Image 1: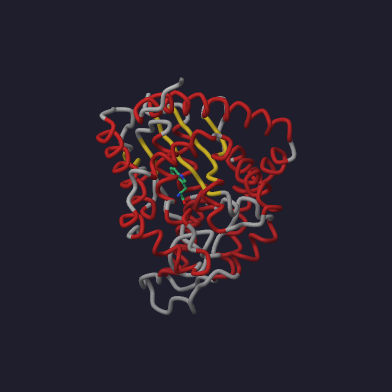
Image 2 (image 1 turned 90 degrees about the vertical axis):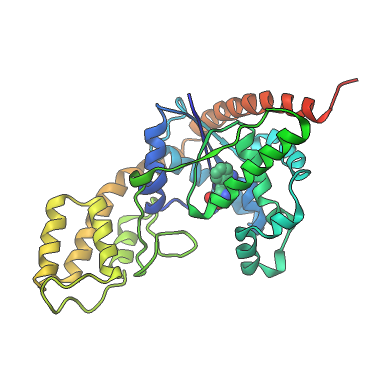
Length: 329
Ligand code: TRP
């Protein structure tokens, strides 16, 4: 069975873009692939989050993943820092990662622009740690968005370099997993672009009804169509894209007709959208709260996932340590 792996940083809650995008596809993959899904808490430390809030962030994502339908009986679910073998591999891969290429990484250049006073080496070697995440489980496929493609390319480069340097086949070169048209791109509520946590334009799985209504009512629109069948500006297209995801086809065509004959009232459209988002999200939010409050279940899930991830990591590391020449006395 093909091995699929994906990681998510632990700062910030999951939004509708995560859910209707990759996460729904992850749930589909549980039966067809051997899946490793983890929370990249070490990566999160590059931005120096407060220690007292840190665990709550990890726990929130875990509860949200489980509530969205990831089944710990089918997939290996774990937290990066609970698998110390990853950190060991990271050290070894740092020896085949060159300063120049790390400095040229697009994400590094982007990230230091946002935190000039904290250009730490963890930020520079972010792609090396990510490569360790992937290579340690010899993943074949990694579902990545555009912003992570370069990191995956570097994981392949480090795998190839390490294999060549030590004359081994231990690492598999991971390929990007492309969901193609199954990957819905969820727009944000700010008129343009996609939903994202850094953009602050999102609806979160944890949002309650009141918050959802407030956010949707504030979504950017225009002054309305004045000519029959005129093309929609991006902000209105985005509202319709969201409507198509959460509402019935009848509702979508009702409002499309209203737009086309210029009788649409955006207030009605938004109210409908907010109601239908709530209908989809309410049961998920309830599950998040229930799972988040069930410490013994979370402990069980983490113990199981950590044991599986460490067993897989240790198998690889045995070969890696041998390849570099470590030997016991
Ligand atoms: N860098 C990824 C992101 O920001 C998170 C991540 C860390 C990851 N390690 C990974 C994704 C390994 C895929 C595979 O989204």
